[in-house]
Image (cartoon, rainbow, N blue to C red; front, side, top):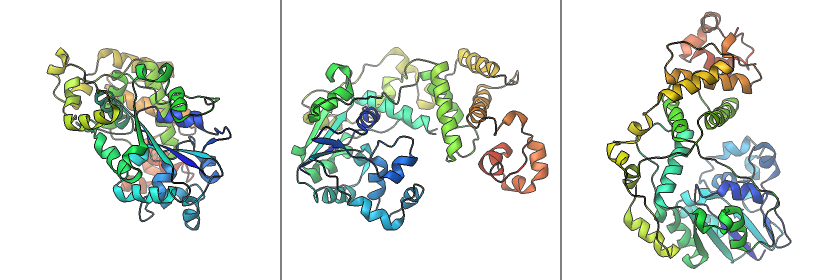
Length: 386
């Protein structure tokens, strides 16, 4: 192997689209590294190397349980860590690396240098406002309920990477549509690293949700829920996000004044020196002055949201309580997604919580929401939920 191209994101800069589009890429010089078969076969999105690299360099093998889920035994662990690919230039893409501490980056560097001394690191970076807004939305999509926005530190993301691989080997590019080749991050990345041809297939991923859609998710995150770690619930939640995107189209906006609190001007200057150009911060607007925090901004629901969710439930044939609050309707819509995704095997409409608790006193003792217990445990155990 003559060269390794190490794409490290950063987060929210089209990494998923790049990874998905490069999956299986090979042109006689460059090859996008495949994941081990056991992982690739079982993962819905088997194109991001973050999973395996993040697992491999988590000291103490604390994440080995995740690998075992995919049939990778502990004895196979080191074999995956030193796997070599017979190619002239290998492409690795894992935005998780920007979150590594110094020791983990050093370990990664030592492993990669077993195969070549020519390691070029590529990183897209976003303007501070765009990054914080996008990363905060992603946080909320997966359960965040706090009052602070997602933090940003360019220096923390890249200082260890520069220290291990050399600042001269780390190339930065601004992720801004008017700066990308044809406004397309996939074409831009292919040109940047020197691919002979553009990827044959492409995938746009992680589409933004509207402010009202994010408000619905944020409200629901604070509602008593049962674990989403269950695989079926995870995919039902994904379906719910898609439903919100369809019902409440638009883009996510947030007051600039809230974002400004998360921005360190010296950190901005550090990155601007590497980019050779200025980063942008938007001016404040009148609505910025009225907003006191994230909870205040996301708590501003509108009558249209209530009407839209109620109409969706009715169109699905659900019985909707006349005095139900927005969050109660949102939770009912989540139950509808579980019902739909499970092909009616987990149907909250026909589930009797009183009878379930009467039949199974241990559920009452567990303190779990009855239907939640049925989804997580009871159905698999053959318990009667009718």
